[in-house]
Image 1 (cartoon, rainbow over the protein chains, first blue to last red):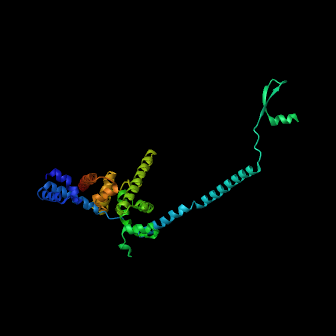
Image 2: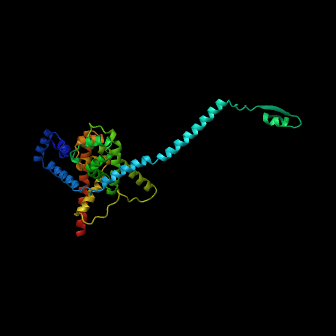
Image 3: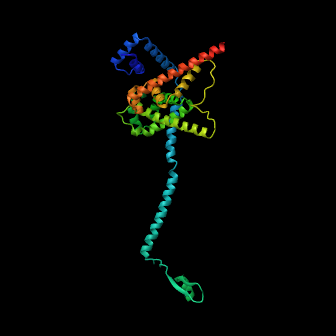
Length: 143
Length: 199
């Protein structure tokens, strides 16, 4: 195995992710090659430095906080319940009123509103010409 | 049964059957690792705590979608990864808008570290590593943190991220060489400053 290939494999070798055959080849090369050995030492030093960063201090109340958060989350879901209940009551009242009125109209045979009709009136003494007058308005004059 | 002996899958089954309080066992089991992961990704300890809380809420909501044939650890870290990347993207947008509006933005994780007093100081060394980790591309940082700090195998990283093994190998290898280069350059510059001050 040449230096170029070893250099490419060093990081994987360090992570212990090489096959045992490749691992042996890298180890064999590192024993003899000074340049690769120095590269390897640098890598080891780097990972050592990275690992010297202490893990963050743990908060003993963290699990309790999470569990409280779960409760809050559940409560938030039910916070909308009163509003939904009011909306449902209103909708039920509205719809029942509407259908009651409809059934009342059907059973009592209530008259359907008459379609508006218009009559043409010629205004002789005026220059306004022809006017369309609603029948109800005309009825007032007829009286 | 002792809580320690219960497997993740058994706890999930119990929670889904209505024993919500058992979820706390999972929180106690994984909170350290999750907070560690988020802290390393964001380099902001306070934010990491609040993101971790949201992560656990999300995990709870998504428990019905967890398939037992998969690894539970990979399942929760996938959620943690997605939420952390979302947070980082939001932060980037906030910084961008602040700059567009001509405002200074001094919030972590991209804040400037205080000036160094002594390069040998352990705290300084830590902040230097932290700063260099933040300089890495997001994918490289994610892969490196999952490998170095969480000690996941490449296979587990593949489950969490959905990347192929060769991609993971390349990302970690590049992250290491970039960090090595940057730290070495900084150490050299410290030496130059130190010798100049001595003179």
